[in-house]
Length: 137
Image (cartoon, rainbow, N blue to C red; front, top):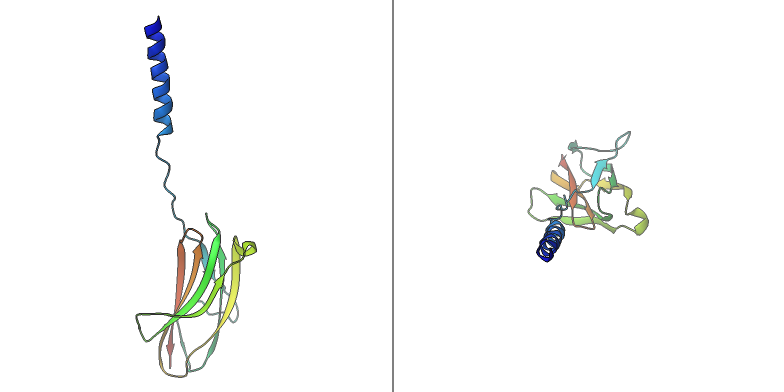
């Protein structure tokens, strides 16, 4: 009888230990959602512009699984390899679920190519980026 109790106890403890050792599901690392604002006056995609043209670009960002942390706009001229920050903003606690911003971009006063990069980062480091390429004539 004691042997049966010991076997049952061993089995019970083994089941508990094995069930607690299950692998946790991996964090899917879902990046935030970011969309360009549309409508009259907004630029939402690649475009050919004149020198010194002013463009309005707006974004709306929404958290997926993790709070939003920062928003950055940078640019690269003529296919360069490094970007220059145009606008960088750390979001407040009130903006952690969603953020909206309009930016005015002035094309440079010389012909060439400009790549504008819009980035939203969440607290886990997941990044969503969208780009607009300008050909300046």
